Structure formats: C-alpha cells, structure tokens
Image (cartoon, rainbow, N blue to C red; front, side, top):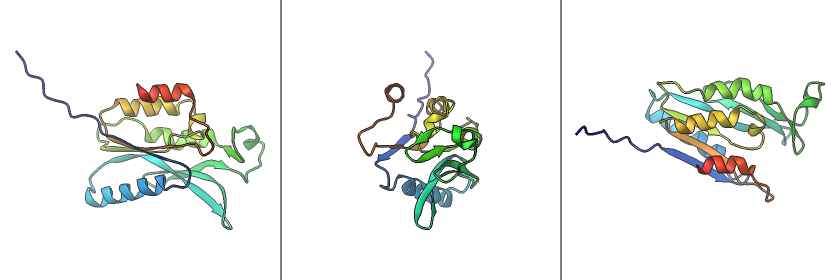
Length: 167
C-alpha cells in the first residue's frame, strides 16, 4: 500500500466590511509586514485606493503590489471613450484599464507565495475575465488575502457570484 503525503489545506483569508472600515488599509499593512519579515516572498496581486482632489473623492485607482497604477473609476473624466464605461454611482469604471493591470497579476506562477486581491467588488466585476481569474487563484494551492465589500445599502454581489464563492 502506498502512503500519500498529506497536502496542507489552502490558506484563504477574506476581509469583509462596509466601505471605509479599513479593509484596504489592513491588507496594505499585512503586505508591508510580510515583505519586511519575509523579503524573499513572491507576492502577486493588487489593491484599490481612493483618488482625492481638494479633499473630495473623485475616483479609485488599482495598484499592483509592485506599485504600478491605473485608473479603476473616476467621476471627473468626460471623454468620448469614458462615456461608454459602465457606472457605479457617480463613477465611470475603466474596465480595460483594470483588465490590463490587474489580470496579469492574477496569473498562476510557480514561484508565487501569496496573492493579494483587494477587492472582489462591483467595479472589478464589470471585467468579465476577473471572476474566472479569481476562481483560478482560489483553485491553486497558493495562499490568498482578499477583500469582499459588504454593501452599504443592502445591495449585494450578484447571486451567481455568491454561489461560486460558496462552492
């Protein structure tokens, strides 16, 4: 009889809460601490942060763990191209900008030690390839630190997405 080596369970940590509670701040601090304690750890992924002008939030940008940035959503851009972008409240979501920066960060690579995904939210889910990429990451044996927002006014992530996460 051949004995099989036990495979450690996958480590997945999801941070959740309403807007402004500190999900991104927590994830950035954990990332900083991990990089300090384990400088050889190969981290892939992204986080989102607010863009403010004169104290007012005007949008969001996506930031890779290596510091590259792109617009995620804006309330100030009024080009012909942005008029075709989907809306979330007063913000126009730059799906192509998000795809070009965030999706490569979710590619499964052998040397990856941790994925950061902040966040799996409404704006990000306008990208049709995003959720399948998240599922591939979750199916890998690579630890994940991710955030999922809790809706502020009772709206929820679409039912099919919730079902996929529960499986």
